[in-house]
Length: 390
Image (cartoon, rainbow, N blue to C red; front, side, top):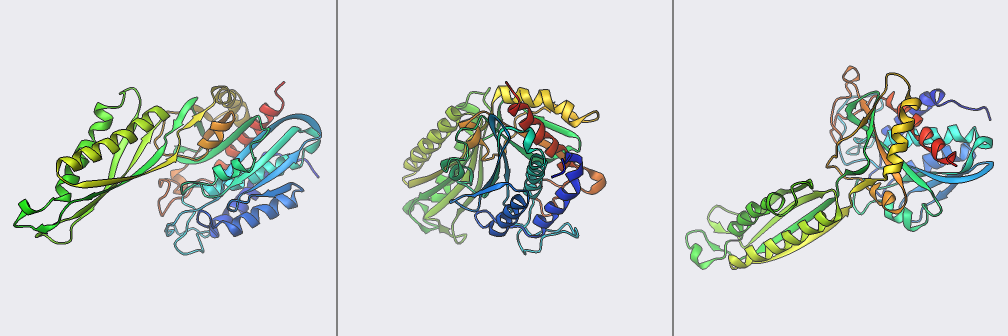
């Protein structure tokens, strides 16, 4: 097979990405996406191992020389959004859209697989191309694939995220905590309903709920160390059926974000304690259903340093390699870096000239496809550096 340069693979990446964009599939439903990726890997002569949990798959490429093992990861699922950007490659699956760039992530990883497939005789060790399902929906696809052994014996794991808030040509990451945990709470307050004109004969769940919403806002400001960023956001409060009826039930839901496990569990405990005490103060009862979602994504410092060292040379003059600030969105890549050293990297994909300006999860989201060249180069540079490390 003729040795391929990463630059030569951009047209293929665009083709692969647009096919996937036209045929998006929701989390845990990526059957055709997985089949398409598996077919491309097989064409490249790469061994394909299919996951027993969901539609994940891993391409295994063993080099001619002994060495280390590197895992490169991409996610494959789309979102329940109706696309409105009018592209010729727009979604053909009504109500489902690649609005987060996972189609591009998959295409970049396929390009890395094609690159290394053409250079087997040069590879020291083993490369695993991990195509993960269900990143967008908890509990996510990462844990199932880890349980099946995709990281066993591996020395490092790397992943990328195309990111329209950064302009084309900019890449960034950070050592230590980079992305927050994402937990959810569902609180039900049960009072005693009755006539709006006789509140003394009722237990008003809405009044208790309103007091709780106000008090929840004090957790970050008065309980959490101010040097540890965190968020408690109430997203909904629902109760009542008419203007003259005291509501018997009130439901409050929200999200919690933090960058370390101590803060994460502190917030959970305070939410549960506040709910119980405020409900009791109003003579109501309450239950808390607390969903622990993805943990914080914490990059290995040495692997971040590898990124910061190899990216400028790999991407060339004109690229910007930056130290990122923490961001509050979550990612289940966090599970991989809890197991082995790794680094998650953001690849700038915004470009007003191509109308690539909309935020992720927006119905008009799109990215500059030239960003995939930067991403594929980064995957190769990170893997090469790790595999050739003595």
